[in-house]
Amino acid sequence: MKILSIKGLLQLALVILVVLGIGWRLQANKANNKEEAELANLKAKAIPVKVDTVKYSDFVQKIEVSGHIKNHSDLILFAETQGRITKVYKEKGAWVNKGESILQIDNSVLKEQFELANTNYQMSKLDYERMKNLVAGEAATKKNLEDIELKFTQSKAELAKITRQLENTKVTSPVSGYINDTYYEKGMLIAGNTKLCNIISKNNLIITTEVTASEVFMIETGDSVMISVDEYPDQTFAGRVTNIAQKASSNSRFAIEISIAENKTLRAGMFARAFIEKIHKNVIQVNRNAVSGSLQDASVFLVQQDTLVEQPVKIKRTIGNKAEVIGGLNPHQIYVTSGTINLYESAKIRIIK
Image (cartoon, rainbow, N blue to C red; front, side, top):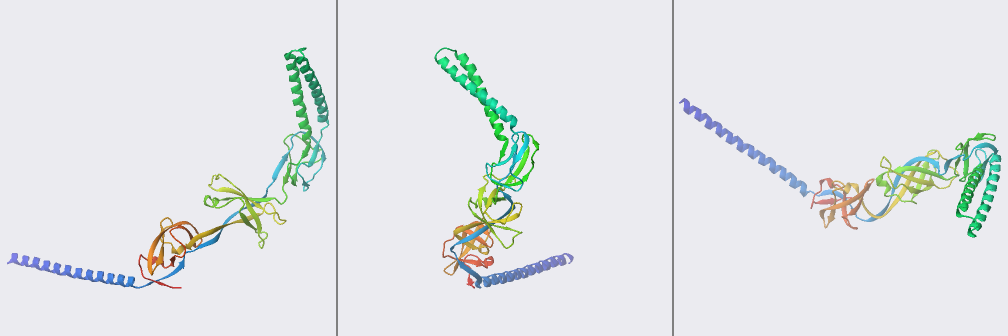
């Protein structure tokens, strides 16, 4: 009797397990059917979307850079000879033209040396010409001619050296501009390579700044630039790109030079912001929200005869809330601009304004 009772209990437990399994399965099927019904109901509903028409258009892109305004010509002039300053022709703040004298260094000794060197040169030149005639008439040897020719060459070189030193006693400006600062005064004794003055250009101002590697390919020499400074918040100034570096600096950026149009307001040392305007003509732009997926694997939903088609596209760049499309779209196509998160191929939609 005891053995039979155990068997009975086992059979009862097995029956209970079977009944519970059947109940769980029925409940799972019910939940699955409910989920499928809800999904079918969702698909059956029209998804509200906004649409637009694909078209070509122009847009302006502004590249912003900044930097300090500088003089295009900003050089330090050094003495090329030694001596005492005897005359000063230009003082600090004066305007000087290219080639105009700034100061005179004592040249009395050099003048005497020049006269002597010139006399030696003229005499050696006559001796050289006579010796050539004698050699031609076989009245002298070629060795005599070579000795005279050596003296003639040396005297010529000495005269050129003294002439150059004499010319350097009159210090002239290599450029036109303002003498911004001076380091000389009359009577001062100077040596060669002494710093004399700082010359800056008149109203010839530039901004030297840098752009990124992606920006440098969009900029061209001659591009127009709009410039602003804090000192004149209500004014803008014109400029243009005059130089673009062909090699990146150590920080992978490219130097560019912006020349500022002549004006009487801006000064070197001011901090400026410059905006380079690039006009892109006849490009296709779509709303950034219309793009599904990543920019490298992008797609756009098109409306074709009340049916949605997911169209792969190639994106060149994004600018603000716009994406420039260079492949996959044609003018006059209708595309979805918003509500794309729940869209899928062939989904039912309802176009809203």
